[in-house]
Length: 152
Image (cartoon, rainbow, N blue to C red):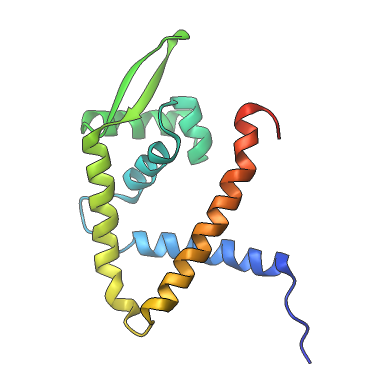
């Protein structure tokens, strides 16, 4: 008789599989929707206005890489920048309406390209997977919220 897997084993598999799923799904993005841009805009969608260093921390990239990505998205009109009112040496970056539209259009394009691959799954099965991931994301977001206020 097999013992049921430990919760930590299940969460390890979930983290691994969700990372692989997101990476593979992004591979189906049509030309014109680079994964780097969609990921960066998603970070701004989740966190709002950020300094370059804050974006780099969320994206887990170097500050020069963050600067290059942000500069490209500003040039395209997807992000905008302003001087940080608390520190004139720093800039704050935020997503524009154009950036939001690009992000949502890109996500829809990826979804439309991979949806036929899940034809053998029932809509209820897809809903349960989505609902479960949403619930787990909420738990992680709630656990990180105190870190923003230094209470963790």
